[in-house]
Image (tube, rainbow, N blue to C red):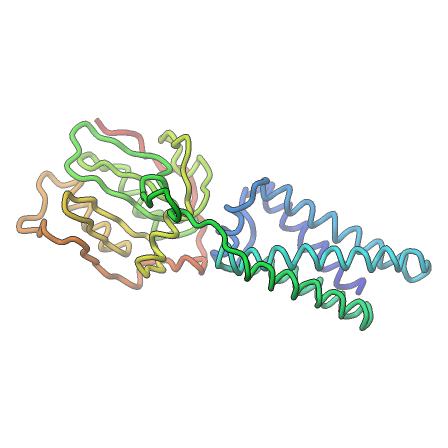
Length: 308
């Protein structure tokens, strides 16, 4: 148990240090970013609390070898950790609807330590965890766009790049961890003929789009929900808003081709259809799945100052 507590302490401390240096968490999938964006407190505080918990657990596990009183405190810590993990896992399962691999690893450590603390501790911990899962499964949570308020993708816009006489209105749905999105953003720095709304699927740092002014209020969950409704699991996605509908372009190469033809070149492509209500241009190899990290962190800044 001492070894597992030590592993948990080291893991959370490394995460805290990485957050201090890079302002992002270490995670092997996109679920971490989604869950992180739903926190009401900074991720640094959240991970700092986790590090404090595991350090306390490590100290209690060491002292418990010599003191019966410390064993009681150790069991209480393990039980409280299991209660917290039950809430966090339930929230990911029924609210965020995506899982954070780092969070699941921490949950695994706490479950195993409760198992090692004896059958009574194990039974109580499993009962607590199962009860929280059941309760969460019976509750209905608010979804962006649900209820009386109508769904509007404008509510997911982080910032707008304007031009003097825009010929098209576009929405770019992207992630700050996707290299294909990065290259599209680089190309958009030369855009002169289109108004572009930037709709991230997660919270982003201001340095990602340093030359644009963020909206006072925006919600990245709107963008994630829009893609889920359309059955799209990859980014980047470019949406062209038309008078009679929308056009969706997927993948780095198709989006860049569209931008070069319609937003950068002097003239748009001749013969382009204007009558499609929903037109999907599908791509595949130049996209990032929203639930898998592409493995290349976006490096700010990108010059997206207005070209007038």
